[in-house]
Image 1 (cartoon, rainbow over the protein chains, first blue to last red):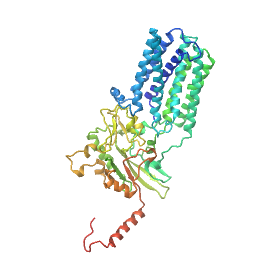
Image 2 (image 1 turned 90 degrees about the vertical axis):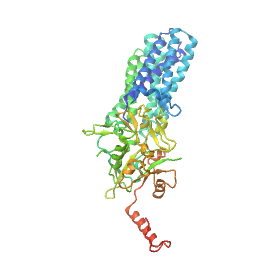
Image 3 (image 1 turned 45 degrees about the vertical axis):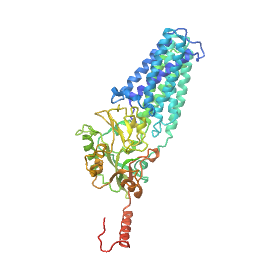
Image 4 (image 1 turned 120 degrees about the vertical axis):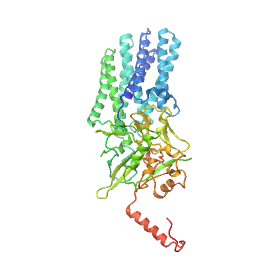
Amino acid sequence: MNPAFSVIFLTTLIGAGQGLFLALFAAESSWLGTAPATGAALYVRGDAIALTLLIAGLIASFFHLGHPERAWRAVAMWRTSWLSREVIVLPVFMAMVALHGVCHFSGNVSCVAITGLAAAILCLALFYITAMNYVCIKFLQEWATPLTIVNYTLLGCASGFTLATALAAALEPALAPALARWALNLTLAAAATRIASLLRNARLKPKSSLQSAIGMQNPRIVQKSQGFMGGSFNTREYFHGKTRQLVQSVKWGFLLLAFAIPAWLLATGASGQYAALAFVIQYIGLVAERWFFFAQARHPQNLYYQAAS
Amino acid sequence: MTQLALVIDLNVCVGCHACVTSCKEWNTSGVAGSLSDANPYGKDPSGTFFNRVQTFEVGEFPNTQTVHFPKSCLHCEDPPCVPVCPTGASYKREADGLVLVDYDKCIGCKYCAWACPYGARELDENQKVMKKCTLCVDRINDTSLADEQRKPACVLACPTNARLYGDINDPESIVSKAIRENGGYQLMPEWETKPANHYLPRRSASAIDNELSRKVEQQRTNPLKPTGAPAKP
């Protein structure tokens, strides 16, 4: 596939926003192994930043549409379409994060508990729904695996917890070491599952072939003409046109930027002093990761577009 | 339930692209139009088409065959492009099984095109909506046309009659017979999309020869043949 930057920014930005919210929720629920934060500053600002990331992701997604003014129509087919479900759940989650921040600001404890739990459930649902957009296309074999769901969730959580660590280091230093530990563990877990999917995809055998594409059993089939000499939607949308070396260097690049360097920064700065730098590097790495995710997927339609003349 | 479809005889297609140009001509001026072109007379021309004819070389030299292969939307009976559409712009018509796009509802998200393994959908870069073969829905439903004209433009244009059109769910239709008698097959059966369009395989020249001589022999020795009456086609 030809990676679309609108979708790359949508998925990485909302992933980080979702992870950041989960980190705040874990902190206020005392799941980090430390006492919850004393003041509301971390939560109010954290929710505001999470919301900003979610809004930025939503704005990026509009650049993917030919008719953004009709985007509201996308809520219609939630019974069958994962994309429609995503379009519904994302704004509801955003509203709940905003409410959660307001509740923290006003200091209403029960309101915080209810909105926090609701937003956490929506957040996990959103990870699942976003990933299912890719998992459900069964002939994009690189995507059609439960590993895609695990990766979307863990990668989002890793970047969100790293950002939460950076926030805590500035606003609530008592929480920072615990958050840094979580961010490190999530980064390492995400590295493990992403490498697992890289290994899986390297061994993947495409189910479709030129033989099944045109329905002839002869082992030697060569395309002589794709029917036109210039380009078309089919040659633009599904081919990234980059060299093998470039794709491979993006892979090693994201392994370094999204996992190795942030993990090292989080491990050395145990009280989160390098977490802001770690987040910036990790986010760049995740943009590269998502680019690779799209570029690696081989669409069966490409079998029909192998030779111009 | 009716399921309209094309059956394309690869034994007969000569790769003349008449179906491509007639499709473009009809549909750029019809309800699906316009099918915009970018840079049509420039260095890298590009445009929206519903139908393409591709060419493949099959076999090892000197035993090779040149296969001309027309490709358009297959109007799958289980179309993967339809359930993924978030707006319902992409739909399969109950009455005749056509897979169509409502251009007024399409938001141009391209998700349906990702979900089609055949690459049958093309985004119109000018109107920014997804387009695809409609089997000339505005011809076949036009009651003001004569019956023999109510067929897709590509079918009418084909000089070798390589394109058959009809209802594959009617066992007596021309397409059902062609599929049954000539081993009609579907593309990429591994994805279980159940394409309505079928292709008739290449037959070797000797197989056709044998078939012809068998028919001639059958006619010659037919005891029921009325003597002296001219053979009817």
